[in-house]
Image: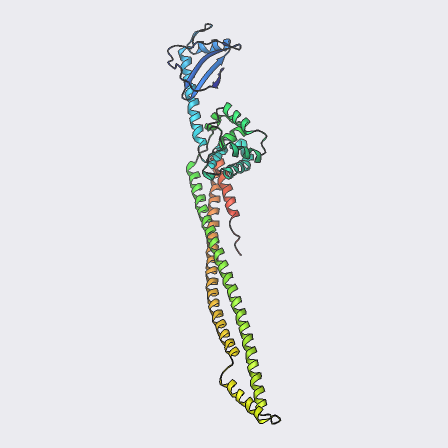
Length: 391
């Protein structure tokens, strides 16, 4: 159609359609109508020749300075209503979470941008990373974090330039904040209408089933992560108990060595006293004194020897206790390891089932390729977090 549309500020204008709105000369052009619908105010601008053809074709009559025909008003109303509806739908899309916005864009323009799908994946996760409040459930980055995003993305545009370009196309819907969908529209030069009308592919039931399989696999992966944490705790407890056993065994060995030392000292003392009590080369008093001391030593262990025996018995009991605890910790750790191995096996099977089903759906064609890419990418990411199973 030979006219252009410009969005102006809010206003309430005559939308009766029973009479025209006069137009005047504006820089060599003729403003044929100003019209408001919803939150859009439209100006339709044509040259004199274009206006004559347009107005007469749609029910008006051409005179310089004349009003707009009724049919022209009605057609402008239809266009304004459509644009208002598109704007509302676009606003709704930008309030979805980042993942939804990315999938919508990928689905709609897959043939054109599939070579950039990995980059869009990275853009999305950068938005999520920078969204300090809502993370995955967010929809917009504020001015500060948008600036940080543009820096990280090595964009040459400033935040202000980005917003101005979006605003000029009716794509800025949340003040100074920018949604992922708005940024993608800016980067790939897409209009509001193109985005709203972007095809989302067929076979939604199959996409939903694939998403359900993936969600099941992701839940299994989360369970694996929990079991891995439990295994880590159990192995740490096992290592701690093994350390206790080693310490107890060292203490026991020290007690044994001390006991042997005291027993040797006792044996040497008894032998010495026996020899002295029978040595005729010494005086009777000396022999008798040695004999009395020998009798006393034999009647009861000396204090150091008694202490050594008590310490050795205590060390032995401690070793036995620590060994039992270590054995229990080992059993618990082995059980956790078995649970992890089984969970990993089940998760691998679920991820493979989701991947196989996605391959089958892709083969049929006519589906939401962006959504399929996203799920395949999530599967690849999930596999990175699976521990390697021992063969």
